[in-house]
Amino acid sequence: MRLARVTVFAGHFGSGKTSIAIAYALWAKQQEEHVLLCDLDIMNPYSKMADAADALAKAGIRVIASRFANTNVDAPAMPVEALAVFDDSDITGIIDLGGDNHGALALGRYADFLRNGGDYEMLLVLNQYRPLTRSFSDLYEIKNEIEIASKVGFTGLINNSNLAAETTLQDVIATADFAAKASEKLALPLKMTVLDERLIQSAEAKEMALLAMGELFPMTPYKNKL
Image (cartoon, rainbow, N blue to C red; front, side):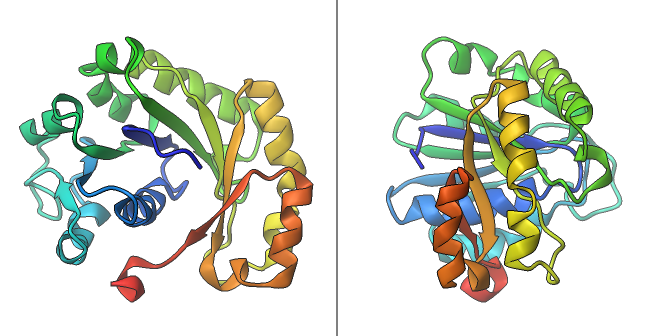
């Protein structure tokens, strides 16, 4: 998958976008020197990103998250340091955008950079096994809500359909048709399908390319990786 200067992961609550953003930042760090992982989920003060901050720092990845994350202070304010993602051209920025249109409002402040020739990807994460992204109408609604609130258009889809630790390769393969039709109906290319690293090593996983599921991206639990 092409590594853009700024990559935004967005989707409904529970779609898995934060875990993908963390794994993607680790992958990006293998290619670029200055990687910044930014949590723009201003609606949720309990941040998995903050939990991973120390481990990511050991990998040389700078993390920006609300200073109120994992506290009982409800202060939906975007950290000022997030400006670095857009102002410093030497930085490869990975952004975890808050779920639904309310969280997407945070990105609207930087919409001009992204729309006016900025090198970016904004990727809609779907999980067919989650109740709020099981239908095309659900995906279409969340896509429109986020695009209107953020003032930025999506550039692609990510299939992150999984059943957590119980996921089998067949569970993911079973979502190939849904992901392909979602790509067609939303007019967005399917950029990649996320697979747990234990599955992506299998011989059967190599055959998934024939199902037009996009590039296979390994999901490595960051606590085990670092």
